[in-house]
Image 1: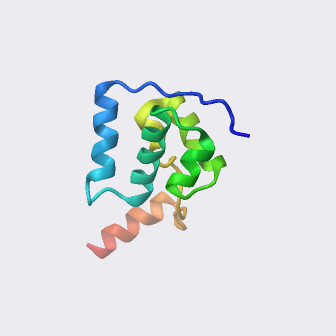
Image 2: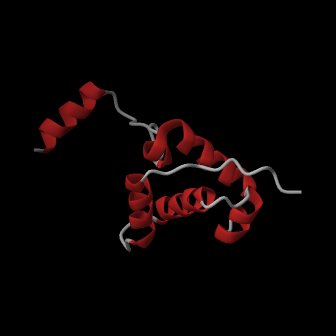
Amino acid sequence: MSRPVARIELDSNQRQSLRQWVQRPTTPQRNALRARIILACAEGLSQENIAAQVGVRRRIVSKWCGRFRQRGLDGLQDKKGRGRKPSLPEARQAQALVTAT
């Protein structure tokens, strides 16, 4: 059984930005996928239908819809702090940069 649809209301600027993300060939695929999820939710589709349409699990649809509701378009960007942390302290990094240049 499908969960009740918690529809997302988009203003014209948000809708235009999301459509540009989907249509632009230079947009990273993860951002285009997130935009497709939000646009489908704004159309009133259930999470299960959106998940089947874009090829992800319902949990992923729920995650991105929730982040969009909380933070808008900024919520669709990756959180800070991802990736490898620097292995050298800042002082050593500065020293290495001075030595290299």
